[in-house]
Length: 283
Image (tube, rainbow, N blue to C red; front, top):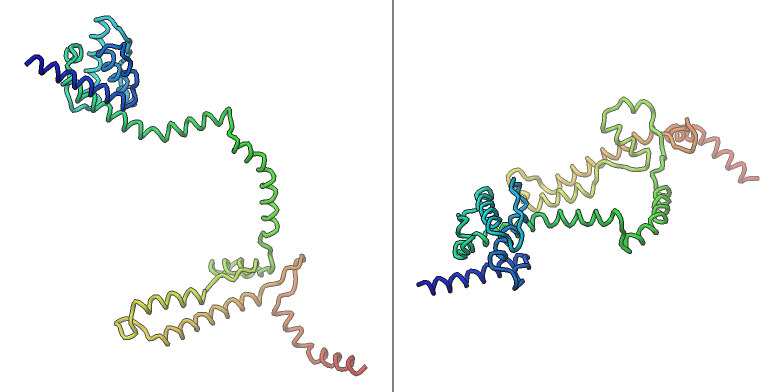
């Protein structure tokens, strides 16, 4: 019976060491260390890697005295319930190298350490990069800094070239109009005719007509929907034209004549203009 237990203990020892190696505790590979130093050192490393606030000094030293070993194992056993470990372990089981009971605890600690490493990996990587960038720079960053000024000048030139240019000026009477009128007149000042879109309306009506048949409940005939679209489009165009007729063209001077006023002046003098043109042709 004792030989079977010894064989099982040796198997669990090898499994525990392999588990610690897989987790990243490579000191368990050193042949000169005792099984106690390998396992207890691995457990201490896992607890430290879990990033949990514990008011315990888990100072591990290899080849410790018996008193130091007893103190360390008692601290480890006291920490496990605080970490919500589902497995229970006694100090004498660690001191006596009872790997049958130690292995489940080490397995849980390794799993917890790997989960914490995955959670903190991105944060640690970003922190490392930020610390590196404080004192050093990569070749790509150096090349980017050398080109940044030229690119900035080019971008500013493009922005100045294609910046919005005011074409018209709305009269002061539009300042007290409703919000929709103020928005449309402001856009018209810079040449943007924002409002009703005939193409978008036709697309929406086409999608609705595909979903609903003409004879279905709540549906409308196709001819009726087309007529309503055209009516709304005509109304919107008339509204835009009426707003444009009251706006003055911007030519670098304040107080320019509005397009409607220029049209009325030309209409009143059309007969005189045509008469002068005919006289000039006879000469």
